[in-house]
Amino acid sequence: MDQKVTELLNDQINKEFYSAYLYLDMANFYAAKGLDGYANWYEIQAKEEQDHAMLFYQYMQNNGQKVTLEAIAKPDKEFKELMDPLKAAYEHEQYVTSLINNIYAAAQEAKDYRTVQFLDWFVKEQGEEETNASDMITKMELFGSDAKGLYMLNSELRSRVYSAPSLVL
Ligand code: FEO
Image 1 (tube, rainbow, N blue to C red):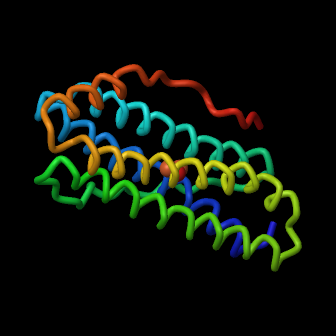
Image 2: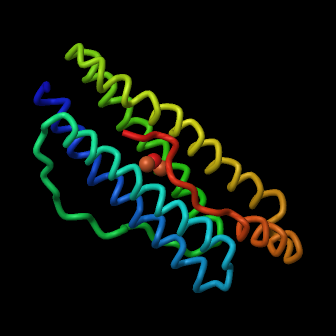
């Protein structure tokens, strides 16, 4: 495999685990505020990010590449208002999309079409993640300033259940 593509794939394992850590910190923030629905949403989000990390890990191994695990950074965002994690999540997903696009471009450049095909699932997934994150902001803007509205939003998010990723390697 191309060295640059391999390095980027390896790096992405770390970035996805960092994403899990970041979302767990958001769950932690909402749990402390008594918003168990929001906490549930971000706990599940954190699990999905661990799945993403494991997909990159498995893909590397399936292709005979040695994985190097680096330290996972401490979540560095400060949350004060209920809206803060929602905006940080949206920005973070836009950043992750740029990382995926970057690997995609490197794989295309290296004519590594197997990796391009593997990444197609992530390109679609990032579209969904950005839409979900942006919807969370819109709903908070529309209903979150009112106690009844916030109660309703929190109840809605409590019903989210975890499901394993649709991509199987
Ligand atoms: Fe693994 Fe939220 O992207």
